[in-house]
Length: 124
Image 1: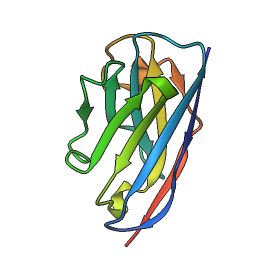
Image 2: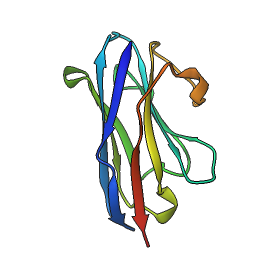
Image 3: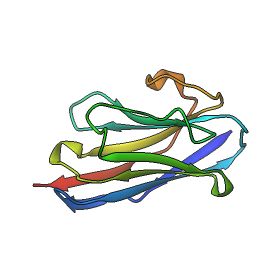
């Protein structure tokens, strides 16, 4: 089993930045995909970004492209989501997820493990 734990959420003003972290523990895989998803109140969960274990194959949702950057540090078993130029519509609970394969789609159903989520609130 893989345990994922997010941190770094909080309250920030519009235009500000936050960096989310996702620490993985338990069983590790040499090849995997890490993804970030978010869910705002009353809305469905949506894909934000994903990255393969070699640091490549990065994909972003159109809504965050150019503002968010996903990365991983395999030595620390940790993934990151750097969020810049935050907007009120970015307010949501952010979840990291992983799949024990080198590639995964943007569908949450592709992912095997999920964290508990961290709240991000952007004030206007």
